[in-house]
Image (cartoon, rainbow, N blue to C red; front, side):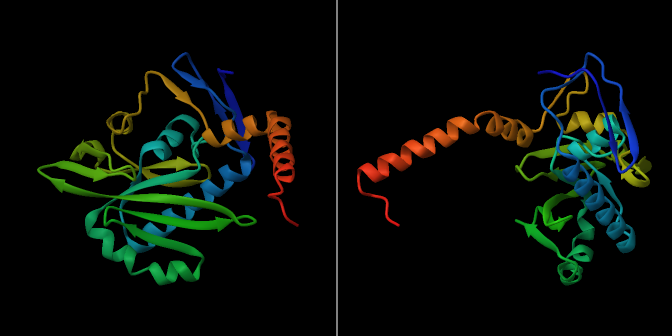
Length: 228
């Protein structure tokens, strides 16, 4: 089913999302517990960067969520950030501190950081922090899939502060251009959550899966391959 509109409430904050012919939903959004978890992990990382005086911007799907929903991306389970290469050592120095606060920091192939934690009844959430270089006013970074992106310096800078739920986050100077440069087609967006698609499929096909398990069980008994 394709949805033409969606409004939701997160922590008492009403999000009215006016959708037009260029934006369609192909699945239910993530459950609210995932949205709350994403929101608070963004807040934690935002506060960490402020404390370390690391200038950053949200990027890719996290930036898309801020633009369209004025909050979290309601279809993504993770968050994405972008910082300059000269901040790597600052962040690495905090690894033990973060660990003591139940946040695992991994520096993957010296290309990006992966932060993982569990919030609200052990619900796992994670974030990617990409690292960029600047050369001749061109910003370059590599994401978790090893795809390389390039921006003009003034597409990103000066970085701005935008309202995000009840706090603020950093966003690039030219949001639409940066989104387009990361492959987001703003003229026609089809949004979906693979997690929710799989969950719905499993719920609808519960009988089929139970039947398959039962038949496998019978087969194992018939062939004396099942032991107690």
